[in-house]
Length: 112
Image (cartoon, rainbow, N blue to C red; front, side, top):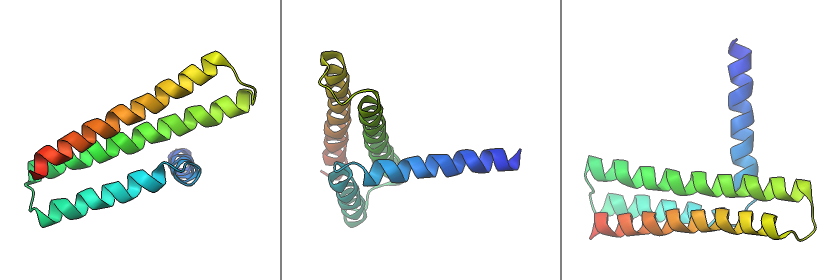
């Protein structure tokens, strides 16, 4: 039972690693997260504000991981141009953009 759960966590951590290093968007999202954390410390945000900021960071990173998973799956299916696959990938990218914009708005509201 324990090894089963250990394997699940190991696979999940591998997935995070593959997603983070296999996607150039993390080169933007991770430094942005660090900036948010530093600005939060400088601005002495309250505990409830920290909770919201950390939740926003988590949601953006998770959205990016889902987007990366879809991109990898699409490439595994076919390398040819396919309108429905293109649309699915664009929708996933749009979801990441929506979460990033929402997180940025929340961040500005918290520190201003």
